[in-house]
Image 1 (cartoon, rainbow, N blue to C red):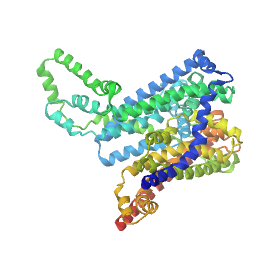
Image 2 (tube, rainbow, N blue to C red; image 1 turned 90 degrees about the vertical axis):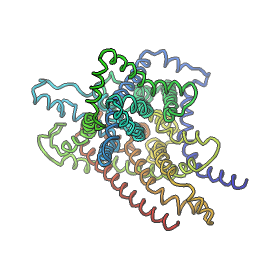
Image 3 (spheres, rainbow, N blue to C red; image 1 turned 135 degrees about the vertical axis):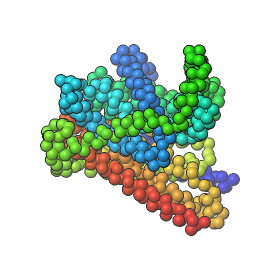
Image 4 (cartoon, helix red, strand yellow; image 1 turned 120 degrees about the vertical axis):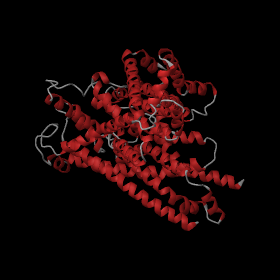
Length: 589
């Protein structure tokens, strides 16, 4: 009895920092947004009536859903060959492909948008190549329209399709394909009969992640799109910053929260598609697992009627070529190269001497690097970003690590709800959180303060810490701690001497993710930073939207180098801590 009370009190103390942070900075502001959407004097739903009766808002909402659906479909079609190629290549090639896919994710979204402006602009790489080859006389409009939005969002969202799909594919035993081919099946039929149905949970998970991210995307459409490419979150931002219509903005935010909440529930179900029960589970399995098999069955019946049996058997014998899949590998390398190529264009641009974007540069100079390091309007935001990122990272690690330990090791009522709450800031569109915090920070004079912006960044960074540390903690044998307890060590000492050395690599990785998440943020800084706490991404945002300043190319190169350098340092430190942790565990045992 006393032991259970002690254990529950200990778990609560681990969750207390998260409660103290999430209560006033996350739950309460979102609850205020919900209350603001409903008039309280007297209570009415007039904002929702206006929302569903205004043709422009309905049109923008449907446009956002259509844009997200198209991006999701494109990511499925393009990402599947990449994930499948990563499954069948050697381990060294797989690590190289994974690195090239992750590299854009470590790079600021603003940097990638700027790279696409340099590639697709009037004097960009594509138009220069077309003019030099004589295919066009005048530059094509490839940016500041729907084309730019689709290209930019596709590059940003494609890794979110590839990674969960690859995680699913690597659990599929490809010996099943070899067995099917040995029995006379072609490689194509074996793929459609075996691999595709088994990979459908990964396809669904990736599709939901891409769709949720696309619905809440703000930066890419705002920079690469035109007036006709306004998305739902952009209208919410306009209602607050330009029209000061908080009631309608709150109602729009609530609608977006409902949509993302429903998608989150669907995503959770897709993770256990094979074991899901009830009507929903049967429907999902019939659509996403049995559906491809049914389509292939009808295809085989049609082919059997159209061609003699002997022709089919000879075609099978001729196509029995193992699992090399050269087409998938070749197309995958081209796609991965397209993901990384925009970042490489930035480097020569940063050393150009032209006063406008020109690739390749006509003259070479270090003027843009000198411009960055000598102008106060660039140096001050850089220092502010490091201050905010450092405070947010320390806060998120000290809050997220105990919370992760509590939800993995603890046993208490409502554990699933607490876990979902801790990771929910990854799903809630950032613009909604920004609006909610803006209203609260304005009441306490925290707008434009480093502390306020750092606290806001810690809210969106904590989920990455919780997910990273929890995944590592689940792989650590709990019995090692129990052995230490039976030998007389207290819980704190057992954690410090046994669990923490094995957990350090995950904490190091979580620290890197938290810092990058804070340093890359634009939306929270746009609402909460103001003039006194202007960060480097916010300064880049202004430079890209209002003036294409080539200094941004130098800033982009520096950000890429800093991010990659930090990642290399994190990996070296992670390997060092893994080795030292293994030695420490060996000594203690």
